[in-house]
Length: 53
Image (cartoon, rainbow, N blue to C red; front, side, top):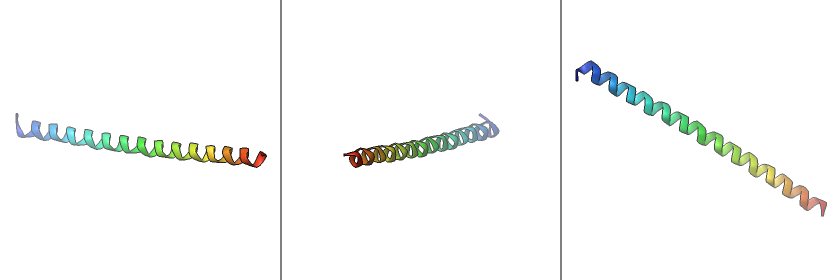
């Protein structure tokens, strides 16, 4: 394997890992935001139910 081939192979792996890291990070961020929104919705619903009694 020539030096250029090795460099391009390593560069593609590094870029792939970098992109994968950011995709996973973005997915986790959105998942946490969705969970927080759902938790707030449930709290509002529970508060409304307790106010009705």
